[in-house]
Length: 109
Image 1 (cartoon, rainbow, N blue to C red):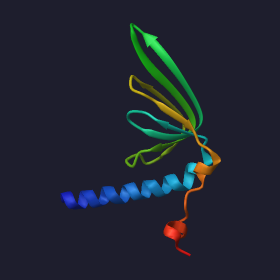
Image 2 (image 1 turned 90 degrees about the vertical axis):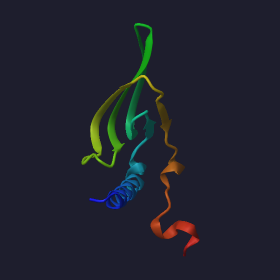
Image 3 (image 1 turned 120 degrees about the vertical axis):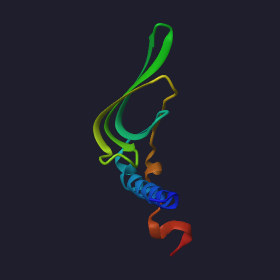
Image 4 (image 1 turned 90 degrees about the horizontal axis):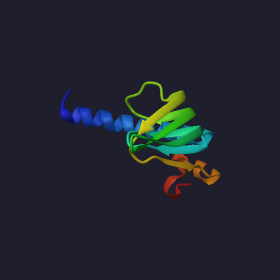
């Protein structure tokens, strides 16, 4: 496989992943960003821990979807992430759920 073929494959996978995200975002309540992954989840528990002078974050999510194009099953029942890096948790507003339909983009009628 050439570098060009690999790049084309990865671009197609990213587009497919975005389309899946667009289709499922409306069924989730939270967006969670860690240093390694992006998640959608319906329940999030974030705890700040300290041990030996080090501070880290423990994030537990349930009913989640993982943004990862190399993962065959992106829906997961439970996820636990432990990280020393920043964690961002946002509650989605109902208006955030309304993504444009394919035929509604750019003012097409």
